[in-house]
Length: 143
Image 1 (cartoon, rainbow, N blue to C red):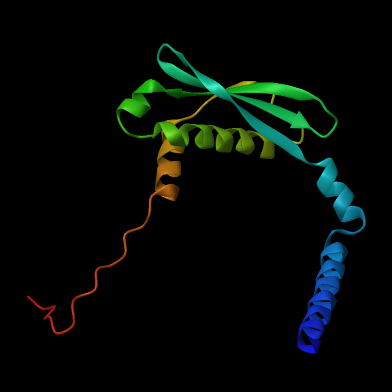
Image 2 (tube, rainbow, N blue to C red):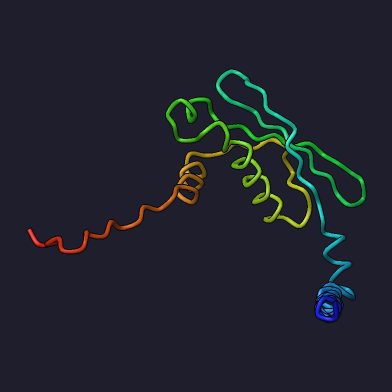
């Protein structure tokens, strides 16, 4: 029984120390800055509109204000396999986050389009890199 109590004491002491460290890293003005800059970008869905798919997002600020943004991707990009349907909301979210990062206030426009270059960059960044194939032991690698 004493061993269990000591283990509990150790874990309790460890937890208090971790809590103190965690609180210390977010204490003071840094915490206020973090909270005041917090926004939530919520995916609302998509609509097929002729030659594009339009993805809707709602931006909610800490003050309770919200605004809607729309990002389109050409249907041809899906047909040509330059983008997968399941990746489209993430691609559009990245596009919007880049717009928000480039400005101190909200972007002047609420409608954006994803370019072929952005699709290629996303695909390149999210395609698993192939690992070099190692020769089996005892195989001669020379031709």
